[in-house]
Image (cartoon, rainbow, N blue to C red; front, top):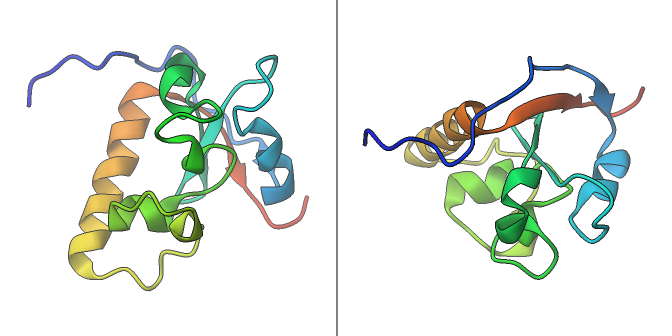
Length: 117
């Protein structure tokens, strides 16, 4: 590949706990809040690419949730944008892991998804 990422992390990773309900607040519909996407339970701040993840944009279905299953399936269907990726096939798991590495190289990690605080 050799391409330089358009964005790179600018802060050390954080592991602040956030419930799925709290994560929903960062779905790109409020321009005063950052936009977050979780992959495999790790929350990334994708605000630098708001033009892709903001409300009504191409990847908006991932914003404000853990979209692991959809990423592994290469799906843009909202019903696939869920955290449970246990049903992914091995080749889909590789796709999900590749996405996880992609996000790690490009966006700040701001927390982790937890069921309860």
